[in-house]
Structures are given as structure tokens and as C-alpha cells.
Amino acid sequence: MNNIQMVDLKRQYENIKTEIDKGIQEVIDTTTFINGPQVKIFATNLGAYLGGTHVIPCANGTDALQIALMALDLQPGDEIIVPAFTYVATAEVIGLLKLKPVLTEVDPETFMITPAEIERVVTPRCRAIVPVHLYGQCAPMEEILEVAKKHDLYVIEDTAQAIGATYTFSDGRKAQAGTMGDIGCTSFFPSKNLGCYGDGGAMYTNNTELAGKLHMIANHGQAKKYHHSVIGCNSRLDTIQAAVLNVKLQNLDTYSAARNTVADAYDKSFANLSWLKIPKRVSNSSHVYHQYTIQLTDATDRDKLKAYLQENGVPSMVYYPVSLHLQEAFKTQEFGEGDFPICEDLCTRVLSLPIHTEMDQETLTYIIETVKSYK
Ligand SMILES: *Cc1c(COP(=O)(O)O)cnc(C)c1O
Image (cartoon, rainbow, N blue to C red; front, side, top):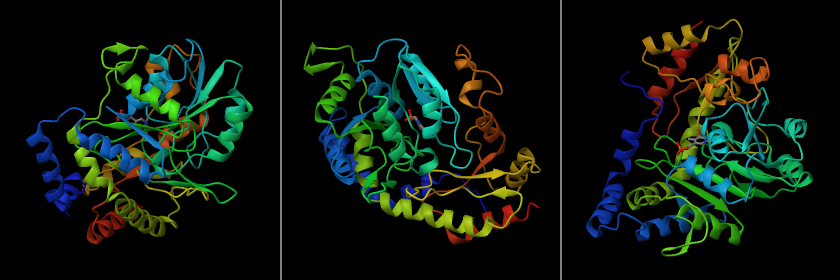
């Protein structure tokens, strides 16, 4: 079994090479590298896919989060609630804008922010919540939206890992991840579920006025060329990336299904292993398995398991080894060791296994047998 990868972008490309090459060549032939027609077409296509929301492309997922916060007219020191168990970008932009990240504990099974935690940390200075749809399924949005309404908070969804996941409300209404709050932020980083061939990102909103503002901020704060009404930034999706994304968006549902096939096989094969816990599936969200993340029991040494898998050609990754409240960069905040025991514990137990759109049966079986052979 040679060269198993966490994500197989090479094989994915080979399967769509003709269309991708054509799309990229068109951009080069017309030299419309910035704001070419493909960018608008992609925004329209993705908006339609998401059920008719406005899509504002930008340079990466981190920028999307930053621009979303910039659009809300917040004051320095305003508090933004964010889970401590996430990728750094979610909280980094809060600090960058001189806002105050209020980190929270997470649910030990879904690893996501909980409405109870939001209630516990909310103060009159809080202005927004940034739930993260971690690993590919939705945070408990119905309850989060209720808490937000009660305390008059904006909701910015970090949906960088969950594009294509759908959430079902108790009345049966379904919505795409990222379209339920005020603004949704996503990333097209190559290894994300809808990845381009470089950096890329986007914001979603159902609010037309907010869409205009996000557009303006991403474009140097100008509504009209060389007339700048607010301080903005320069954050664009390259036309070449939009061309790639236009091809890959057509395959997104097939890609999500392929990831689910892998996850189903893992679940079935690992459910009875006593030394690990398979990832929980929440009942009111579909899962797009950006990551398949197992939890090891106390008695299982993660480093040893990781080394064993590696020796046998199976890569694995730890997302995330350090909770945000213990990161050097956030040490100025009033958090310390022991403050979020669940996050700290998860950081020592989680292990993500290879999952991607191109996994063949032989590789899948090999990975499963290798994991099972550990103990
Ligand atoms: C990838 C990711 C981001 C940042 O996206 P970039 O495009 O790399 O800036 C933000 N939040 C989460 C949860 C992510 O996984």
C-alpha cells in the first residue's frame, strides 16, 4: 500500500483535469486575473447551491472572519464568544481587531460550543457569537440562535470545515451551514471540502444591506472606484481560483458522499473497539466529514498509536494539540491551565484519520485493518 495521504488532491485533480485545465487556461488567455467574470459566476453558483444567499468572495477564510467582524460596527473591547477548541483563525481575528475573545468550553462529544456555555459567559459587553461547525457537522444552531436573540448578539458562523452540511430545525426547515446566522464564513484552502488551488474564502449573508457592506470592506472600503467610505482591506478571490471552484462546486455533493462512504466504513469497523470512541453524529445535522476524528481512551497512548500507524504507512493528524486558551498568543487573556478541562482533555485524545474524496476500497480496507491491528 503506497503513499496513503490525509487528503489526495493529486488524484482528485487527475479525475477533473480536462475541465480544470480548460477553466484555468481561459483565465490566462483573457488575462482577467483579478475580478474576471468567473468570480461573479462562482459567487452566483455558490449562492444558488446554498439556497439563495448572497456570497461575497474574498482572499481566504481568515479574512472572511475578519471582514465579517469589521462589518458589524463593533467597538474596541467588545466581547465575542468563541469556542476554545478550534483553529486559531476563529479567535485571532477578534484579537487583531482589538475586540475581546471570550473563549468557551465545548461539548465533550461533538467538540463544539454549547448554548449553556454561551449563557454562562455572556455579559452586557458581548456583541457576537462565532460558532464553529467543527469537522463537518453543524453546531446546535437552533439553540444558539435563540440565545443570540435573547442577548441581542450577532451570529457569525465559521463554516470553513462544513460547506455542504445541512441543519434541520425542529419545525423541519432545513438550512445550509453558514446561512443561518447573520454572516457565514468559509475557506477554500486546498484541503477544505471545497478547496481551490491556492488561498480563497467567502462570506455568506441573507441580508442585502450587509452583503453590500461586506463587499465594500473587502474592496478597500469603496462603493465607487477611488471613493472610500470606510476603512477596508484588500481581499479578493483570484479569477484562476474561481475557475477551479466553478468546476469543483459541481462535484461537491459527490465529494461529500465519498467522504461519508469512508466515515460509514470507519464507524462500522471501529464501533466495537474498546480503546477508541468513534465520532458522534448529531441528529439534526448532516455531516460532510472534513475530518474523521476518533477519541482515544485513557489507556491508549496517542503518540505510540500515531507512530504505529505511520510505520505501516497510515498518516494521522492531531486537530488540535493545544486549546486556544493555552496558546502563547492568547496568554494576555485571563485564561490558564485547568480553565477548560474538556478542551484540554480533548487535545490529548483526538486523532484524525485519512478521509478524502478519492479513497479506493483497497486503501480503505488497509487503513481499517491497520487501525484494528494496533491492539
Ligand atoms: C481553515 C479554517 C479557517 C481559516 O481558513 P484560511 O482560508 O486558512 O484562512 C478558519 N476556521 C476554521 C475552523 C478553519 O478550519
